Image (cartoon, rainbow, N blue to C red; front, side, top):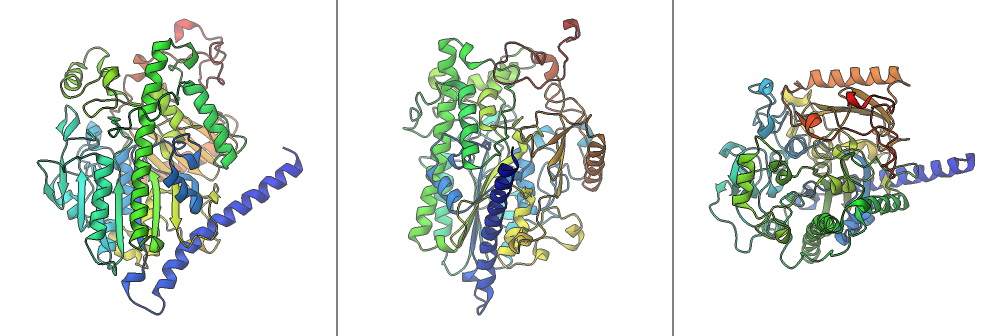
Length: 603
């Protein structure tokens, strides 16, 4: 880059950052203005959290995707986008931090209850449910004059004292499991053959008529909002189950994207990256992470295999567009009832896209007989049934990598493809529509304290004296005045033994082989947002400093590295990573750590 180009880029970045700060300021000023001259709670802003399940960073249009998402795009282009927003690599840990502002290892979700390792059992912070000795944002908001509503996926406990109704929500309709059919109460696996639902603390034996998760959750939130006078502000948590598998399209939407993905995952990823650069979502220097080593080049698939592969993404895209349609229905309703102008809306995804396909796993050898029987008895799995109400379909690793463009990794991993989420914040009072904040490092635990600030509610409403020292989330209020920005903050994380720590432009990542090195790698995300160039040998002092910072984070939050993980056996069961100079890898170099002159017998 020439000096003139560099100056121009820096000026553009400063303008974008200033716009983002100004936009956040508008949220704060709205809340602050409403406390002046009146004590009426009616003028405090309504707040809606909309969370997608397993949506990728680049799936929606405003972040570079080709999927039609006009309503989310409207929120993005009228509001703000944040491109350094971090979550956990899987769902329930993210949700626990969202609702408490504390680290997941503190509040009971140090691991998913389905995956708790033997050495974590019985340890504090690994209860597998959201602990009741820490408050939720719903409890804090309700106690300070807000109506509180929840509809969607809960995944934070099944017993009566762990239901949404017991954790601060006045009205709630919730799926308690991590997943399940979008049409009925069929569960996701042998451990949960029947999905469990509750409404207002009562366990359900049947679902509403014409149930489809995305539509029904939206129906419920609208009904709850309409159930009380509008002179009291509300907090609504709309936790969509889509696009988590089984990927089941709404009726009439199966063919909506027919032919849209015939170009295959390689070309679609490249097209997304171009749009992301044009939109300013990623820097011009961004490159694609290498295609996952055991995913073939799309053009080398047979015709039949290409048809089947493209069909997965066609149905996934239909499900995402329908989610967007329901967001639009909620926005329209708020507009019609005169409530939209006094509402703050926050949208993000709980983690990266899902590469896991239980049907394919069930086909692989010993130990999979029970799983194969479950899916054979509970779901249709043949190609003709894909996307229908009684079928199971997963996105699969190839398309998950497309959804995570341009990053390395996806759900379950601590690479940015698993933990960086698209964040949109919308307010009618926004003065700088469409600005992108690519500087400040945001975290899901920040949302709770930020909401309290916007609602003119003290932090003590959420953080009791005994938990105040453990507060992880930081209100974004300092951004409102243009100071104390978050660009150099440190963030630690761990799930399933995968670890990461980000500080400013630097990030260390520890992932099990074959996905990582089973050792700390070092990346400069400003120069290499896709985590393709390991700089550990070039900058050992930075690596050591960040490792020490992660160790301090782990000690403070009682992180226990599991002695059994979801990655066990994968190195042995997956194809070996090819050498760096493999001639059959035309779409970018393969980021692996086997030198080209190694003896093949050592692979």
